[in-house]
Amino acid sequence: MRDDQETGPGGSGGTGAADADRALLGRIRAAPVLAGPLPRFDPEQAPAAPGPLLAGWLDRALADGLPEPHVMTLSTATPGGTPSARVLMLRGVDSAGCAVVFAGDARSGKGRDLAANPLAAATFYWPAHGRQIRLAGPVAVLDAEAAWRDFLGRSPASRAAAFTGTVSAPLGSPQEYARERLAAEALVSAEPDRVPEWHTVYRLRADEAEFFQADPDRGHLRLRYTRQARAEGGWSRTLLWP
Ligand SMILES: Cc1cc2nc3c(=O)[nH]c(=O)nc-3n(C[C@H](O)[C@H](O)[C@H](O)COP(=O)(O)O)c2cc1C
Image (cartoon, rainbow, N blue to C red; front, side, top):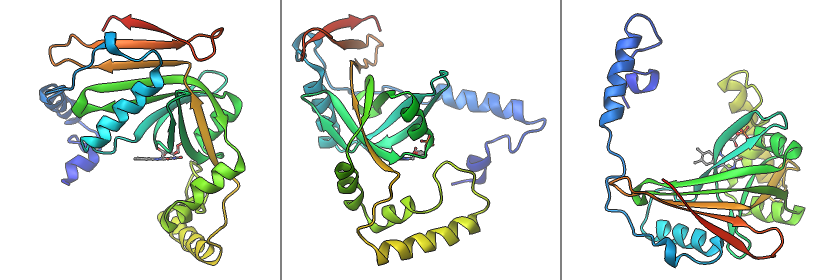
């Protein structure tokens, strides 16, 4: 990687920054998007419930070897409405319930948001397929057994990372991290079954699910499912203008 990719082509600012931003914009506009060929999607043939479609699109992304198809963006908000989003790894899918499972630290930004405001949105995007899925709904914390199973299935490095410092808190220096990390690695090898009390598994049960199939000519297809409150297991389907 070149240095200017680390600091930006304008360096740390100054008189050249506006020129560099213009040059960057030129390169952004020239970058290809939705180049295709893209898979087909027929909303008329879509299932009555979104869970099987979610599982099907994920399965196709995995089968086609797309990079990191199980990485999604999770958006949360404080009770006051301040949003934040970050990428996370998908830890499970419940296609009958149209739910996704993810895991993280209860002390993190998302953990604090979800404790106070248990609603979230999850977004998948697979550029090579031109497919986006948006899910939104309430988030529940799964029980301690789910947290143990999830945590103890991880590599020693991943477990040590979870015991290192406090996620999203200010870090004094890289040396401080290195010291804490060594202590965490020693803890994990001495107590391989230890699970941090902050490790949490969450389940987002979608009340809305939107499937977006891009078209290189921009005639994109969008299908939104909305869970029907009165008919358990029922969903309405709506086409949306792209
Ligand atoms: C590819 C990738 C996968 C990640 N997976 C997770 C994950 O499964 N759980 C998690 O808590 N953080 C994961 N992270 C880190 C988060 O993006 C984020 O930095 C962290 O959760 C703290 O964010 P928060 O304070 O907003 O909650 C991942 C980051 C990347 C780049």
